[in-house]
Length: 160
Image (cartoon, rainbow, N blue to C red; front, side):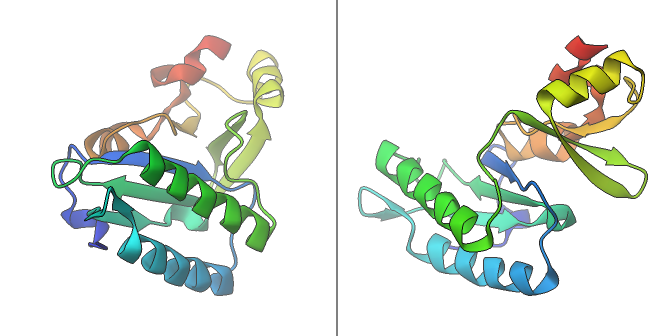
């Protein structure tokens, strides 16, 4: 069951998929339709899942699930991963590679392999004040409060 993302409770489970490039406006329109179609039919053991999504910065897919309504099962999570893999193929992007870092560089979103980000931290090309995207947040509340944070306040702080 597709619902507006903003109506999901703070406790909603969140999955964040970062793209290795910015989506075009045409791609975003298609992705919105794809997401709506998927979430409309997404179920766990025959029960509708109450879910919504956002596409922030033309770069991320944020999927939220109200687990108080119906919790995700292994099969439903597998279905969502297969859906994301299909998007990767369709748009020729990487969405599931967790060994990369996205961070703000002025008005732009930069995307670097973790090793390169580590080297940049060592050479002080980025600092603890650099705003990073902590894609490990697990709830909607954490997403709203701790997704965009200075590197010093996230798991990235180990590089400084």
